[in-house]
Length: 218
Image 1 (cartoon, rainbow, N blue to C red):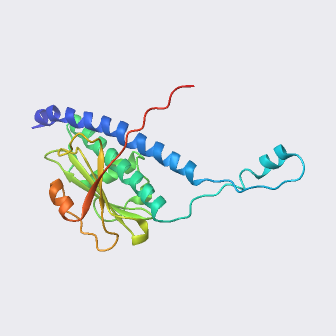
Image 2 (cartoon, rainbow, N blue to C red):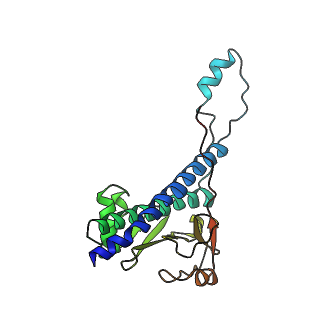
Image 3 (cartoon, rainbow, N blue to C red):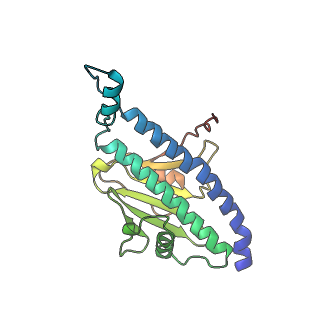
């Protein structure tokens, strides 16, 4: 049994490595660029040395995007993606060492001990994590070593429901993706590891993460 699991683990390891490269890095870059676009500088009218005045007022003139649905959704997407990859990595490492995690609760505690997620996210419910703007549900299939994470918003102002799975066996060649509910209220959450057609029919849409080119060295 262990030999077969070890033989089947390499595709999962490859998926995790690719997922890290094409999911976490682009999301981080996009989040950084979005933050840059959200910042503006008010016009300044100064008397005296303009260089001195500009330097002294640079930080006070920065404007941050108001706390609203858009930045909250971006933050939740970052959290659900990072959690999915951390959980998949934990499962893969356990299978390679001959210890397949029993359930989602063991995975949540394991990645928290490794400081891959904040310990404050843990709850008394197995495989359920709580953040400021969402409840995260880890879904785990030990027979296929698959992970699915659902992010349920705390309120309708926290954005839509989010779902991501690793590996995404039904994915076609459009790049990495996650699923987003089309409603903010009365969201219907699909059963664990449901077929993509059923996920879409229950009111969810796939969203594809655009891969950004790597920055050129100076």
